[in-house]
Image (cartoon, rainbow, N blue to C red; front, side, top):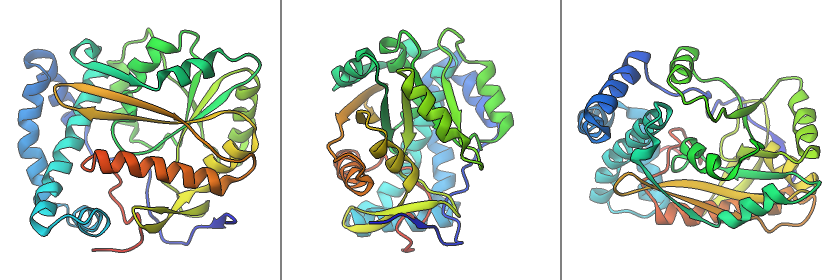
Amino acid sequence: MQSKEASPRTKWQGKSKGTVLGYKIFVFLIKHLGVRSAYFLLIFVAFYYFLFERKSNQVLYYYFRKRLGFSRLRTILALYQNYFVFGQTLIDKVAIFAQLQDKFTYEFDGVEHLYNLLEQPNKGGILISAHIGNFEVAEPFFREIDVNYQIHTVTTDMERSAIKEYLESITDKKYEAKFVYVKEDLSHIFEINDLLQKENIICFTGDRYFEGTKYLTGNLLGKQAKFPAGPFLIASRLGVPVIFVYVMKEKNLHYHLYARIAEAKHRDAQELLNAFTENMEQMLLKYPLQWFNYFDFWEKEA
C-alpha cells in the first residue's frame, strides 16, 4: 500500500504529562525509601487518572473492550491497572536514570540477534520498537551489549524541556545515550544513512505518526490503523538487517527484553509494517496492560 499524507486531525502531540516537582517527589521516595514506596504513592495517583482522564479512558475502554474482547468488568479493572503499570514504568525509568539500575533484574530473549548486528562488518542495522512496555529502560541492556556505543535512537525531542533537563541531571554519565533528532527539512535521513554506513545501529519507534506526515495502514488487533511511514520506508530501502525490540515489565522489578529478526522483502515497506504489527500484537496479547498509546489509535472512540 502506498504511503499517504495524514489527515489534519492530530493524533499524537509528542509530549507526555507530568511536572518536575512530581518527578522530584518520586526520586526522593526512590532514593530514601525504595522503589516500592513510590509504587505505594502511585496507587493514589493512578486512581486520580482513572477517575478524571476522560479522553484516555475512552480510548483505553475501546482498546480493552473492542480490540481485546474483555468483559465490561474486566475492562474497568484494566483501565486502572493500565494507569498503575504505566506509572510503574515511569518510576522505574526515573530509578534507572537516578543510577539505581541494580535494583532491577533483566532477562534477554533473542539478544544474540543484537550481538550479531553489532559485530557484523561493514554494515549497520535498524531496531524498531513501539510505545508498549518500557523501551526507555533499554539503556541497561544496551550498556551490556553496546560496548562501542553504536546504538542511536531517532526521536522528535518534543518532551517538556524542564523534565528532560532534570532527568539528565541525575543520569549516570558512564553510558550516554545517542540520539538522531527528526528535522522538518528531512536532513535527519542523511544523518541516518551516514551512521549506517559507519556500522551504527538506528532505533525507531514505529507506532505513532504526526499530523502532516506520511503514513501506512496496517492491521493491529483486527482493525486497520495508521503508522508512520518513515521507519518502514527507510528500513526497507537501505538493505540492512531489521530487528523488532521490546522491553516488557514483569513482576518483582524484572524486565524482559525481546529481540526478533524482521522477515520482509527488500524495498517492501508494507510487508515490513505487517511483520511489525504481527509481532507487536503478539506482545500485546501476552502483556495486554502495557499499551501506552493514550490517543485515538484506531480513529474510533469507545
